[in-house]
Length: 68
Image 1 (cartoon, rainbow, N blue to C red):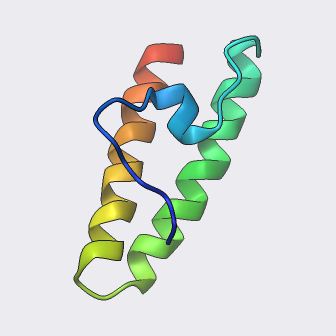
Image 2 (cartoon, rainbow, N blue to C red):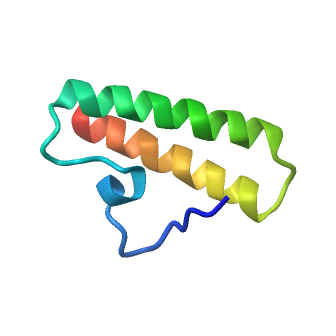
């Protein structure tokens, strides 16, 4: 998939969020990201790529709480 979920990577950097954006724009971006990763999760077989997709969905959930 090509996205590394690192321990030291901030959620904004990981998800491509510009901290200067308004919350509405951030939440729209998070919805797009969720749709992208959720569709990948549902189409991948068990393994590293599927685990990465699940981690991204978890990070999106954390970001939604932060910016809601």
